[in-house]
Image 1 (cartoon, rainbow, N blue to C red):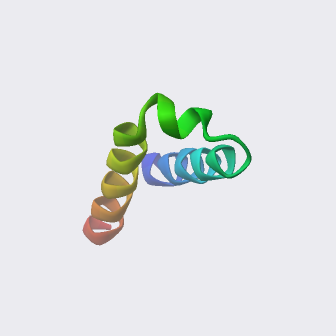
Image 2 (image 1 turned 45 degrees about the vertical axis):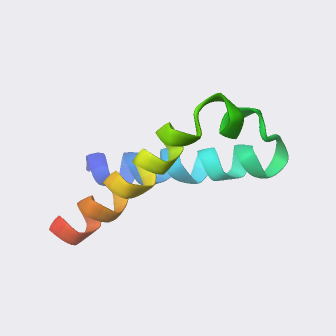
Length: 45
């Protein structure tokens, strides 16, 4: 389902930011938005 794909993407983003902050500095709002969409998706599910 799209929710699980998004979940995997979010996890990957967190792992990347854990090893290198480049991803976080590139677009922190995108990562934050992904987390919010994930939470909203889980609530609707």
